[in-house]
Length: 394
Image 1 (cartoon, rainbow, N blue to C red):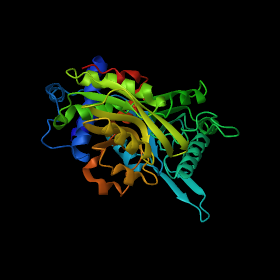
Image 2 (image 1 turned 135 degrees about the vertical axis):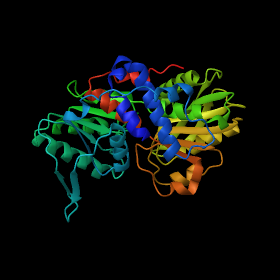
Image 3 (image 1 turned 90 degrees about the vertical axis):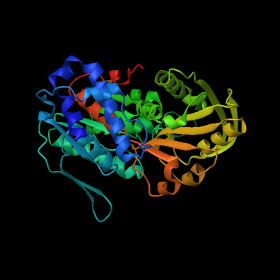
């Protein structure tokens, strides 16, 4: 019932007259709702502020024409997220069959008529990366050959993003190569969440706009609801030099959501022996007696994260939290995440959860980016601003 009200509320004329304020209220309300139902947030926490409660007592008006020419399809990488997005938009997922031939080749057939339609494909290029990437490419090709008007790919997690430059002789720039593949098969636009680095947007030509959404909005909303944390003195930590900008932005948003707290910024400088092997770590900044929040875009084997948490505790940190958008959890990740130095790990559902997460129980909190992606899809299709999603002041 709540989801239908949210979906209907945003489609009405009163919403158009107060677009910025009401869109943000609806988005935050939906995020709170999902966290309460699916993410096992403490039931004793007050989920909605008075302003959010009042918003749903407004009169409803006739809906707009968003659905007349829009189809949403999903690959196999993250169907749960796709279904959640479709539920927020009050639209059914399109019918597509994705199977395998006996030799493992991908077999795709779109069952709906998509001639002249605007099609959104929801498909993360998460493990198995090559299979999911090939599904995405062939699905785009099938839609292009079937005369779709526009093809917008929603890639919550963009694989191969870590190979974004030549850092050694005779290596590919894989992030650019994937972008070129998507352009070649006929993508018109790409929507992603927290790309590993901002320059990936430039790997696409000017005819393929890229919307790089920020999951910080979801994390900040969650942290502001958790009254049991009682943050007093906080340090936002970048686990490496390349993530300082991301951590700085998170810090600014944290200060907006917690006006009574002045957070600090710190950085860990790490030296690697090779891929996935850390030689040493050095802390730049003061963390003694502070609650630390490590901010990163992904957790792969969690080696860097567990080592960073250990260093912070050795330097006198009070509690250590971690927020990362993409939970890859590869290799020895769950062993590393069980480190007593980590108090809680907050991730999103851009990548499906793994059964091993149950072993860690409440230590891992998984937040939903479905309302964020649903809102972006709606705004792109209605030719409205996407950037104002993040202009939230408190």
